[in-house]
Image 1: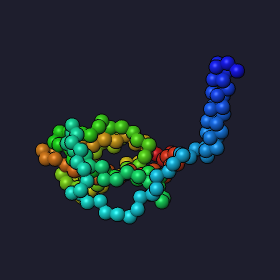
Image 2 (image 1 turned 90 degrees about the vertical axis):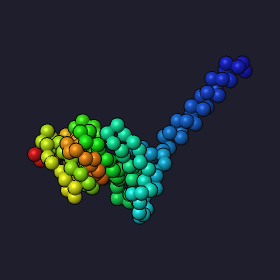
Image 3 (image 1 turned 90 degrees about the horizontal axis):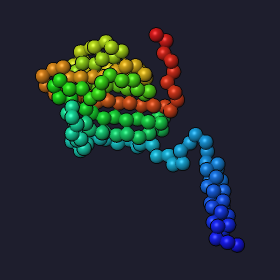
Image 4 (image 1 turned 135 degrees about the vertical axis):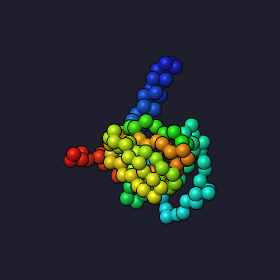
Length: 156
């Protein structure tokens, strides 16, 4: 058997094994699923601070739970006159809780003043953004979640 023929037969065997392994995996499920987060405490003073052009960000947690495909929480501090991003649409729902300072939330082109202690709920696919219109830094928590199902159309 010449070298070219052995290479073709060897390559065919490798492709057959690859196809068998690929087909054996459950469709629509990832090969490895991260374990669900366990109950714990996230200490504000222990969370890494990432400097950003608008201020800073703390990624508090990002994972899945027993009930949710995805649960994420971060905190952003926005300097006066800054925003984290322009208003945009996101497929997940979001809860924003203002820790300190005052921000302006733009929801579907409607600006609203939001002060410390207040909360914002953002429905999936709504146009949303925040900016700091005050003269002091503002910090807020963002909590996002997803069940893995596509968002349902909301009656408007």
